[in-house]
Image 1 (cartoon, rainbow, N blue to C red):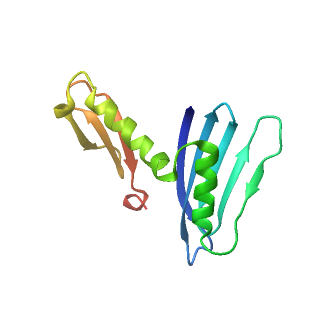
Image 2: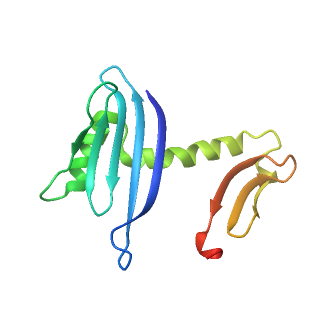
Amino acid sequence: MTNRVSIRTGSEGPRHDPYHFEEIAIICARPHFTGTVTVHLGLGVWLETRVPGRRPIRYSPSGRDPEARVAWAFEALAGISIKTARAIPDRLRERRIRAHACGPQAIGWVDGFPGESLCVCTRCGACFDGTFNRSAVE
């Protein structure tokens, strides 16, 4: 049973040549593993497990295809694939929109402050999602 999934993206490396990274962290409460599993996909590829009361363990594979090795270890510990973990936030957002009392027809994107876009219900004002475009204000 997975309790929570968080996805963090950003850039790493030197300023003159930044590189995109993605970190997916899952807090698990399963019979064979209770703790946090974090996978980092970017310049470095690693997997880290954190179990309460113990030191974190980091696995950084070397050699051919480190992404596949990390993906296999992630799936073995977390119980779901990286692809499924990436899709969970989108699935939950879509489910909330479909089940909204005003109906999905009343939901649309509106502009907020400069660089901000919000997915809101035009009837009741409920907010479902938001994005921020930093380049629009800098």
